Amino acid sequence: MKFLHLGDLHLGRSLGEFDLIEDQKFILNRIIDLIDKESVDAVLIAGDVYDKSIPSEAATCLLDFFLSRLAEMNVQVFMISGNHDSDDRLNYGSVLFESNQIYISAIYDGHLDRHVISDGETEVNIYLLPFVKASQVKHYFPESDIESYEDAVRVVLENADIDEKKKNILVAHQFVAGKGE
Image (cartoon, rainbow, N blue to C red; front, side):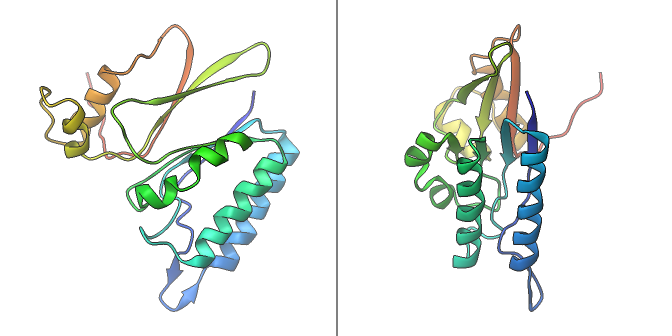
């Protein structure tokens, strides 16, 4: 099974007065070519899909183009929101997209979304954790000590039903730091 991991696309970004949308379309077309050439089974998009919480029309059209091409190619897509994305805007149409194997998790609702992908021999659980703040997680776990992004992610993972004996991938876009032991 082949996965392609993308993140921080920042669609709609500009550098000063220079609009990058044509450059971004060029890169997404190269990514589509790579997905085709390498026979990628699934694309994992780890947040900051848009550059702004209220994306431009050009940015939303570019994402529509990219996701439509992946759906035509029968490539599964697993996408989460990042800190630059508007949860509601990125989540728009997510139920409809699922019929084309495009899974979007943009709003944390107290649990990790889990999707299973299989090639007939190997089964992999894909968990989607949209960008969360401490206050969002505290809402679902008020008894937990949650003061930081790290605390929030720790509590989400502690309360997730993840079978560590299976193959698992977590798609996330968070502010956390590892601790040496």
